[in-house]
Image 1 (cartoon, helix red, strand yellow):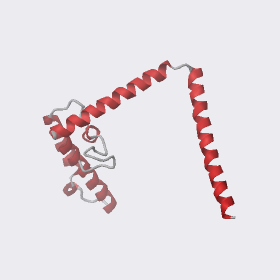
Image 2 (tube, one colour):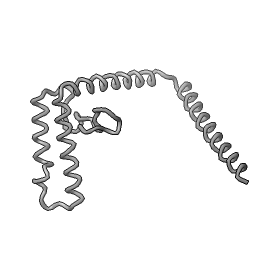
Image 3 (cartoon, rainbow, N blue to C red):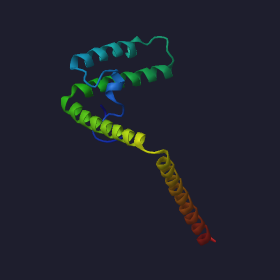
Image 4 (cartoon, rainbow, N blue to C red):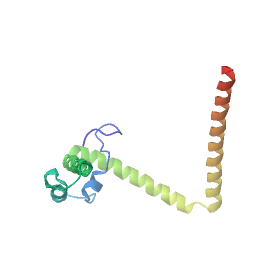
Length: 136
């Protein structure tokens, strides 16, 4: 895919979601999903649409092409899959830890986050006030 806002060769959108294929999809399954979506979103097949709709369809078609190219590139796919698996494992661990947390501890964590946010707002206000006093 085109260089993303995240940097490197990582796609902006999950290519598995774009093509609606499973994480374990073979090259043949990726190609089949691509062809199905390409027929639906190909710019030449879009008669009777407004200019804005045509732009959206063209963008979607480009995403579909980039997702296919990305998933068919074995090296990029392996790197992405490893990172994706790592993030998924972290998310599952966080959810398990969250489910075991007592309601009292959750409340304390929320209070601490609120106190930190309040302290940050006060620091910003204090800095703004000191800047104002310097100007006068």
